[in-house]
Length: 244
Ligand SMILES: Cc1cc2nc3c(=O)[nH]c(=O)nc-3n(C[C@H](O)[C@H](O)[C@H](O)COP(=O)(O)OP(=O)(O)OC[C@H]3O[C@@H](n4cnc5c(N)ncnc54)[C@H](O)[C@@H]3O)c2cc1C
Image (cartoon, rainbow, N blue to C red; front, side, top):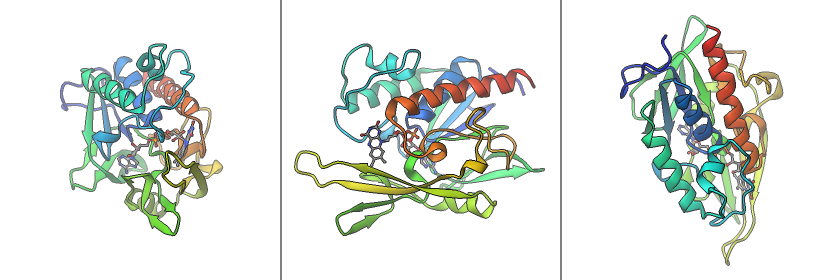
């Protein structure tokens, strides 16, 4: 495999699942580092999405978040638009709206992902940055939805595939406070159990070539911590490619 040879889909070094904070950070840093990156996310309308409308952030230096904020307080929508433009503008990165429904493996090594739409995507490395969307259940009052954030659909397929492969999980719970008369809500989801995930290398040893970062690996994180994890994931991935 030759890093940097991605030209509009002919070769992909890395698939990142989820264009939230950690996935967007990791995908763009890897693309800038020369990898051909396919960033797959359920909806292009929720790229780099936060829970609130205008969230005060303290962007960690060196992150995409710092670039996007540019030293100012920005709204969630501004952050989303700027992140989407930055991701779509990089020649090594292809941002794709699609839902990943499972992993593809050959000879005990990850080789890509299957999608709900039916098109398989292949790469020698897959990074899961699925946030609070693995077997997510959102509760508002008495109502329960399968959403990882308000109005953001979650599908159980990827979780079911991972569980069928023997991965073990713990439950995580995140809460959104009431806002402008709207009621509070809570999301319960799954994150990889500590035995499955190496917090130093981001590797999931059960399936070589598979990595994870963000809430699906760590559980509850601040926005800033999720951004930093994305950057650190990119460093680990770029280092792993260099030593091959
Ligand atoms: C209800 C709630 C309230 C929160 N409140 C705060 C707060 O006040 N302050 C704070 O600092 N943090 C808060 N957080 C935490 C914050 O959301 C996370 O730290 C941060 O967004 C996590 O980043 P991430 O990259 O792990 O996941 P996310 O940013 O959630 O990104 C995950 C992305 O993966 C995509 N995805 C998931 N599954 C698939 C799939 N199968 N195929 C394709 N794409 C997929 C999703 O659509 C999403 O875009 C809250 C979280 C929740 C759920």
